[in-house]
Image 1: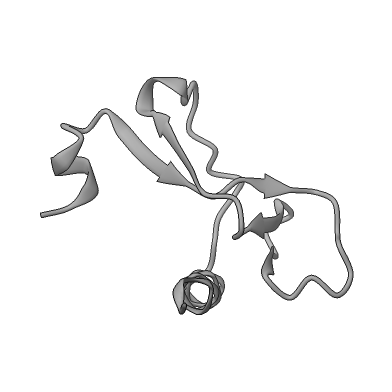
Image 2: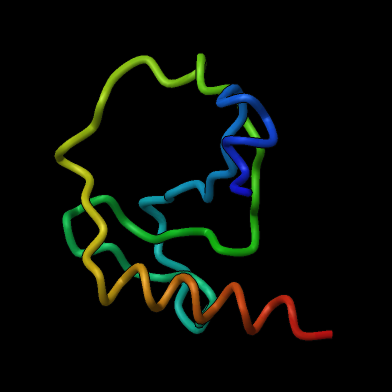
Length: 78
């Protein structure tokens, strides 16, 4: 079962983006499409109704997505 199934497609978990670079903060993952950095330490659950438009200009490559997943896994190790 997936998160969207559990929440009946109403809630999604997102990581915000920032345009501010924080040198030395290895847990921020650069998105080369010009979007900035994924703030992996801030996890938000939001309503799907908050999304007002599709943003095709912001894309995350497979390598970048793997980096985000790896960082999240590292953050979850207790």
